[in-house]
Image (cartoon, rainbow, N blue to C red; front, top):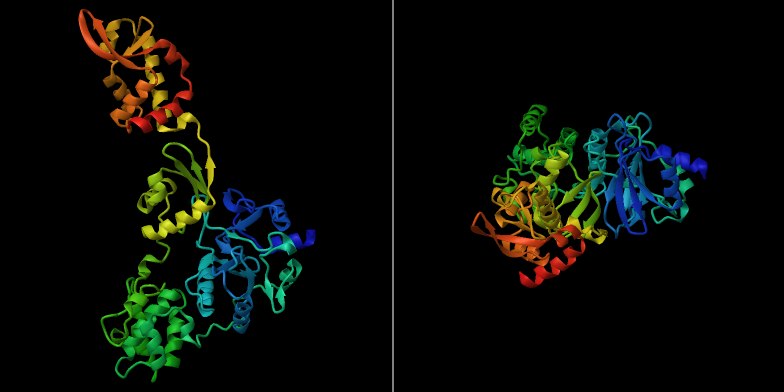
Length: 499
């Protein structure tokens, strides 16, 4: 087993800054700010605590990467046939959720993450899954942006449900390691030709034109629109794909000079389908096109490393009133109010402010789905009484009353300080409110504050100073000396009844 462990570790070389751990007993994960060690891999293969790795190693290179096909009804044997038909150096593994992880392994020193991502995007499209996730999700990682980790296969060794698939079925750990083919970019054996354009997530108008051919006089406009698609779906290799399409699918093919003119136009920063012009105007199905990853709704100039990818894990709900949330975002804990957790705009602002990351804009409906998934694995944490707004206000109240120790005469009441008089502590409510403002605890309404003061034994009082009478509040000194946390739960019940 020791030898297999070493070989498994040699395949899965990830980030030295962090790794993920997954607790099978409660189906939750969290990020550890350190590289995974031999003990972590050993516990993973024994089925004790799962691990995940960020596939960006030192120098922003990849030694392994993965295509994540999150389809729990997928036929792994059929997927393996597609991989083998194109001679792709991918290991097809069943994922934790029942989908598929297609792992790519590279020899030392690895390849730049950006190049690996481009290659896997193309391969995913060729296999019929152009919209799936690619790991790594980032071209580079740092201590500020640790990156997204992916769960490793063979959790539990040969007893796993996360096994690799071979021609005759599930492979043992030893068989999986033996079956791995390291990727050599110089090897021209891989078949990346696009024989069937329906395999790609192409807009309906272009699929129709690919079958029927470009109308006479429309070759230039038509090829431009195909170029938009190829540039969106394969930003690094789009010119080769477009040239291939021109030579195979355009009859007669455009000359080299004409092709170069179109390619130059497509190289501009902002480019988009010409939906209002022939030959695609007559074939437009905008409603369907908007659903596609590379459809008209995709704005390519927003896609190239302008936004940071986020990963979410380890949600904890702190049972204050109102509750707060701790959410692990890219390996860092974010403390969130209810609004910051549930409203995507507030959440995005929090990430920018606290983590210096720029998340991709997201619609509220999509964020709601993330919330639903996170709530399934949340943990609830009891909070001390002073963590609630009521408890914090009481703490401030006792601290405010303690200021009476510096009072030297009854006249100090008029200067904003509480005083002690005949076994009671007297104070003016306006002075206490200003004290709350100084501690930034003035979010509660006046009626809520009055209920709390009443509950701890405060009552109205008239104080005479130099012959003049003033309205004030008073509380018995004995109560102020108690300062017990038992007030808090009773106050919450009182607030619920009175407000």
